[in-house]
Length: 293
Picture 1 (cartoon, helix red, strand yellow):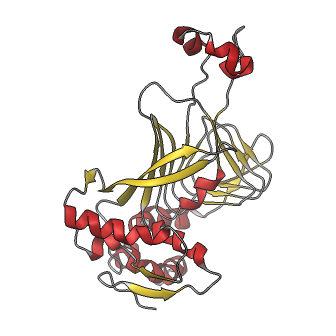
Picture 2 (cartoon, one colour; picture 1 turned 60 degrees about the horizontal axis):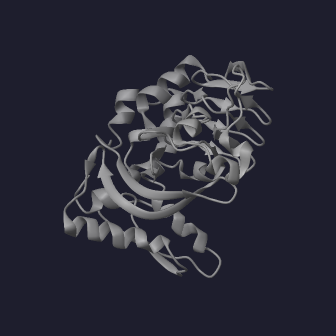
């Protein structure tokens, strides 16, 4: 299907495809805020929300505890642990939680602060893949294009385009050739506009075969100067997962959308993702379609 950047498409989901309405969020960055905790998910990385395990307490000031690039994938059995580290080098390594609610209720705020175990946060670059039964622990940085093999546990930094395996995860090999890394870096799939994405598989194939130059390939697609972002409220679920709440704001880059007409159109569009429905109106980039990106 040829996609227009200015057109919305009507999809009949049928009785068994209501889950597809969540894909309204896919082409955009998602920012989830829980008081002072901030979690950022890149384009087409919204599936990572279900992989996070939140063992962190609220930081003292607004802090990004998780950030992912675009086009990251994670198997349903994988886990990303934010927080949970104890001060094992300190005599007082317990958290307030070990005392229970009644004892900790008697602690002063200063005493509670001394028992806090604050998260270091987790960062994933563009195109990171977490295979089955993998774990990423707090404080880890995984660079662009790196892959964790099945069962790996990442406890330290992972370099760009590396394949890592084992417990703890160790570098096994570079998964791409120097030419492929050049293509991935310079073509910059993360910034390609939504209506151009269906063509990128063929473009990247031609680049790898040497049938296109990178300059020619970049000229075949449109790029975004600033990525649209949806800011949402969040809460912690019963299993320490993120539970998405309502939309708080819309942004393009760091610019918040304040025009009432534009904000109303965006809210009506994304409200389709709430509640059962048999059809949706979908756009490859609703921000661009209404002229604000």
